[in-house]
Length: 103
Image 1 (cartoon, one colour):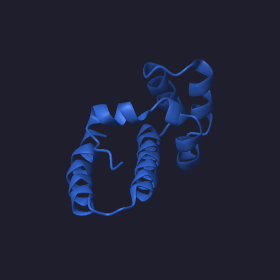
Image 2: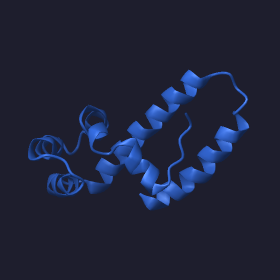
Image 3: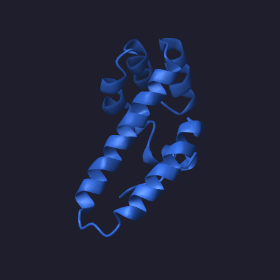
């Protein structure tokens, strides 16, 4: 995930400064939300198996019920990346990894 953060940091920062004069804050907010959703799906895909998903989510502070729910459907990355994972892998988690915000 840190390698993705390094690549995305350069791209998003440049993109943000290029379009900074645009009068479309809602579009930036929606795009930022979609990017975080995609990053959560990528993280789930990297963990790949249910046992890894469960153990990693528990180490990040998820409850047993939350981690078990995500681990049961480990192959459904996109669906689970929005449902409950946004409460575990928060914006602060991605800020700590170095992902810039658009909004």
